[in-house]
Amino acid sequence: MARKIVVTSGKGGVGKTTVCCNLAIQLARRGNRVIVCDLDFGLNNVDVVLGVEDLAVYDITDAIEGRCRARQALVHHPRYPTLFTLPSNRVCDRYISPQAVRLVLDSLAPQFDYILLDSPAGIEDGFHRAASCAEEALLVTTPHISSVRDADRVAGLLLGYRFRALGLVVNLMRRDLMRRREVPTAEEISRSLHLPVRAVIPEDDKLLLENLSERSRAFRLLAESLERDGAPHKKGGETL
Image (cartoon, rainbow, N blue to C red):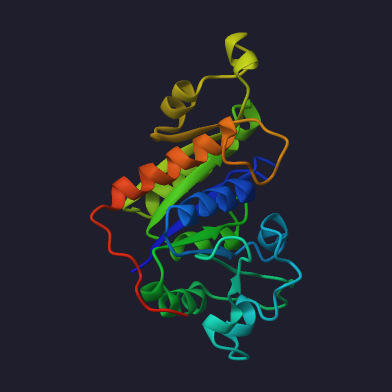
């Protein structure tokens, strides 16, 4: 049964979607069957980051509204055999309830190991819809004061959901700025937000990363950490 993990942030521009997609790739490389579900209906770009924007026929709203089955809405990544995207390729013109999203995800969960939910940034309805569909959460922030301040408010809301696990990802960390004390350290951010640090991701210009880069290694370590949390963990067995 898939672990449902929401990846969220206090503000846009902190790299939440790239964190979500790179983590998914590392989990898939380790043999896990993974879905990245785009729940950012307003600024949906998971498919673009993963390079599958031309492959989508249906999206999650089609599955919710009965125009296709949930499995038909999945986009199989051409490079990673166990990685799938559940896109959100159009702006919704009506309210979609958390219960409707949950029904789609629950129908897919027995076939997968992880479902990563890319949440809208901030604290509006989209955030709560994504958070209420998850059992675990990763809060992404950069080491800049404005980002940490916004993350603090989101952290308080996440604590109210009583997730099985809740952790912090500090993204776009530059060691030179940290050494000069121009940005706080990950440990200082952790103390400020009262959340454990799950990963510190160094800054890199690329969206998706080569396996030997320092940034890629950070995502690999995060994937390994998540796997240890879930062990013993049974792999999803049913074939699509």
